[in-house]
Figure 1 (cartoon, rainbow, N blue to C red):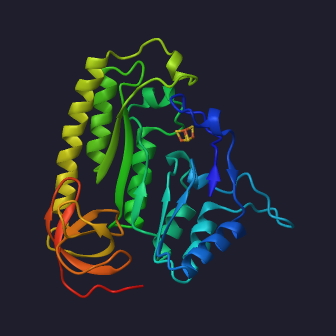
Figure 2 (tube, rainbow, N blue to C red):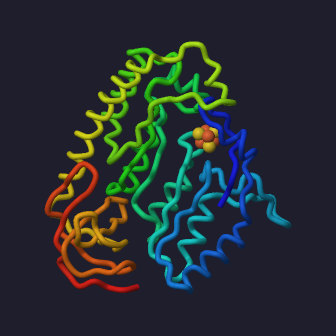
Length: 294
Ligand code: SF4
């Protein structure tokens, strides 16, 4: 729905290679989604480098208002046949109450959000030029969960950003623990030529980065497992995507959990599945009803 980005995170190459944000007109996106729905598509992902600032660069003829990301969610939710809407990636700084309302009210918008943290240290967030701080990040997460209690939350975290001290890293561990992410994509910082951070002096030694990365991974694996176990016994709606790695069927819940089960189900069918076991990165279950096509 948009390309480019108006932010200037010091580790990121996007503003250099993609330039400022350019959004597609809302009508054009809607026409594409309607066409996809007519051809049998059930799920769409609205993609933008900073997806929740969608529309800020657009003007609407004869109107002082600009299209907003919340309006886009509501418009796509109105398309017959689309059962699941996802979006990625929102920037925590640009998250607004109208988006939370739209997520809570639109039936097709899935109960999942990818909400990039990057660091739990305010000092490092400042060096990264991420324009939120850890307290504000956690406050937004609290509000999102209050509006959508069952929501699955995933994140990105960078370890070993230049100048990151043990204290900074511990701040990240604390925020990760408090946030209770379902899953985190963790990255070891590596300088991208051309970015501001690549020129920073205090690059963290590789072995220190590796050690912090391992500790963060261990913490998150434990949290992910705990979150997965909380699903045991519950019945979830699985949209089948294909064969599982170990045979059987694999699909995904609305909360973006991968589910493996033995039983009926072809790609594009919805199957009610009781979760039998939670693993850190997926759930296993048993179907409790017939597979239903769209
Ligand atoms: Fe933009 Fe995301 Fe890159 Fe920051 S990390 S500059 S918000 S694309």
